[in-house]
Image 1 (cartoon, one colour):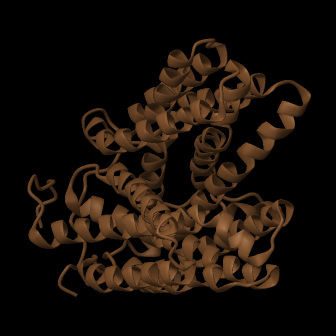
Image 2 (spheres, one colour):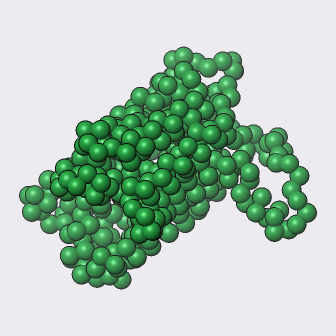
Image 3 (spheres, one colour):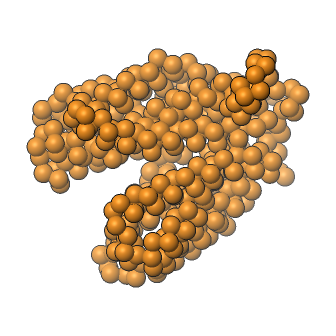
Length: 411
């Protein structure tokens, strides 16, 4: 087969792309259904805010476990199989929070839901890398844009259902049916597992140190995977800070009302969604390193504007810059993790995912601690420095190798 990149993907590849779009959108939709119904579910189960925080940590921990389990399984059985299993799992698991009537039931339900969500994160991104390679040009960021769109649709659908005073169990049952239908329609069109390089042909890491502990760490977390995970940690930490603290920072720093302060998060999330639909063209023209480097610098500039601004329009402009800057970095990292040239691409990606997700969870907590010592605005210095470091070390994402259409699409 000619190693040159085809400018016009074939019909099977285009169908696979559409199927992955649907899976990403479904993931965002199901996650949003849980988020928008948190107040109703906590009232139903009698869970306090403090207990809810612990339950969310349980869900996060099970999500990381799901990521680590999905990586080796996707390497062994192929990401298409794992996507199907994970979508089915998540579609059923979304019912759990709606039917829970107490804290223990809710804890079990969220652990099951989190595990499925983590497994789907890894398996669908592994499939996305595979489709991107077959497609012949960068398309990863658009997949993440569809996740955001799915989240928006889920939020609006959940809000409409609550406004209509529908029973929460009926709403979640409808969401589960949508998930099963989407799985049935999409999974058959995903690509079969690629023809991978044999382990003997994979470029090995430098000779490991003699110390058995160090050798074990290096085998479990190779240097290139750790480097990508560190950048993912920093970028997702900054995104988590924006999600959880943008409105409160605007409220405290500018002394505006809660409704007005909420515009900050809206500006950030809207800019990020739009940016993810545009960044693939930038990546295709200038490369992954440029997207991470200049995007990180733009994100840092946005955070700096937010910190020094004393005028609401200027603050909103800062959050727009931050959203646009941070939109493309994480998809480039996941693409790089899936193209490290090893026989365990999904496992590598699961480790990068896990480290990145830890950053997403840890960032808001770190800001809370720092805000106690200084102020919320000064605490934003931490994500600002982290994003600047991402710009400095952007070269670790590398540049894509010539894309070969290695998928056995007819199997």
